[in-house]
Image: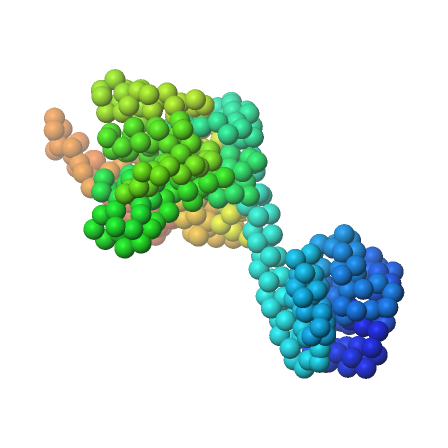
Length: 446
């Protein structure tokens, strides 16, 4: 770290500078503020330690000029007891701290240690914000199919608005990821993103979790509690599985969304909130309304800007791009993927959608050798969808057919254990290699 020591008293300046150099800092000495300002654009300091009373430019004016040049420079003031009130005023103008003269140099070192910790936290937060921006830019919802491009267009339209969004899609289609993308590409990105899973909240605590409660509102309410609406104030509130909100509480949720205010449990005092709501569901809310299981007025309030997320089986052309994307996440090396792998996985239904594909890719990367994913490491139930090791149907089958089915499944299972190695498969089954080859051909396994 670079430190400027600015003081017209040479003894103090030299003594402190030597101490700081011994502590490992890069130190520059100046007898007055003017000389420091002339150098500050060439060598930008992390910290400036300056006397408050100096002949050319006093510490207050010096502080103002520093903050105009660079607000990230920390300023420590050295002051006599008689000017402490001025030093306090200087802190309001942006000074980090002050020390009274005379002082031990160790006191300055302690202040610098606090600055280093603070700077570290700020730098980490900055890096985290940059990473969040990168992780949740529009390209993080991977795909180039027509359905994905339609979603991109909708998200770009709604991201900069405060309009409520309803995400509709099966489990694993990326509803939470899309929520992150919308939030971190909106004007609310610096404010909180609060997520609530409505499915895991019991009826008893739902209202308290959403709206908060006051002390004594019910048994066990030992203190005031802030609800998720207040936590998300200024930012985004994400309600996952909105269809699980109890019917009798839906009217309170509707009121909060309509009037932008809530009432804590046990209180009749309204609290204003400014939130952008994103809700998600894997169910047909319109059908639930028709069946009397969801309020129609709440449905219309949520359905202002619906976005339907397609199942993976509806955008199979994206599978290749998704696998490569996930492989790059799970390996620092470039992973080669055999084209047969893509062909096999495009035939798989992926009931768990993108989440299932992500988990499968992680497994394949772990099992890959020489940074290459080949078909033989794909689970046999995916490679051979007709194979079910736990159940055989004997209905309307002859004994010959049953035995053939058992034999076929046994060979396929052994092939999987041997990673496709026929010699090893024959050994596992206790068969001559020629016999195995004949059976494989006869049963049409490969």
